[in-house]
Image 1: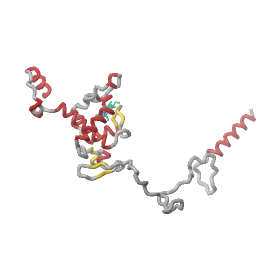
Image 2: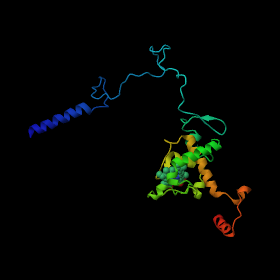
Image 3: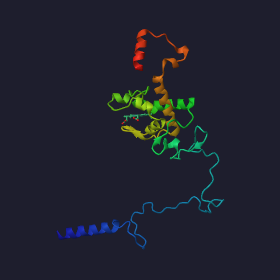
Length: 226
Ligand code: HEC
């Protein structure tokens, strides 16, 4: 028994002496059992370096280098980079916690097409092709999927929709890692088009698309309006 206790005491002593005092201040060089990656050879960006002909550690970009980050052009023509995280176009916030009212980038037919494509990839499984929340995932028991034609979603700001796509909400995850800033605004634009498709009034339909409505059809039309 005595030997066992002595053994345990020695073990405790060893563990504490080897691993227990990391973080203590000392003037002596530390005993490093696992140096991890505390020190490693590297060049700081603006350091002189004799290896290269021009004597610098940072070298200019090789000809033909492709930029990984493209600027986003705003309505006013200003360019903003995706890493400018506090800018309205990247954050979706106009000031403080107020989301921006309208999409801050030009809504073109290309943007709309991009939105349609990305919506059909990322959102359709849950919200359905028409945005009514009847995607296939719901049939397999995933609950609480929102119908995006509901008045509160229609009334929310473009910035709010952008935030939901970026960060997610409740059971919906955020899409910032798979959809870039422009993709997310493009989806907002497409979502607005989906909503508009159900909010349009008869008078807004161009003449050439007018169909002579039967009396019953007219009634159900009015019911919807009320
Ligand atoms: C995995 C299923 C799923 C996917 C995929 C999904 N959503 Fe959702 N979404 C939900 C659920 C669930 C809610 C309800 C969240 C809540 O209110 O708790 C929701 C809510 C919303 C809302 C309403 C937010 C609010 O303010 O109440 C919007 C807008 C929305 N989703 C847009 C999108 C868009 C755009 C995409 C594609 C980028 C998408 N969703 C992808 C499940 C999903």
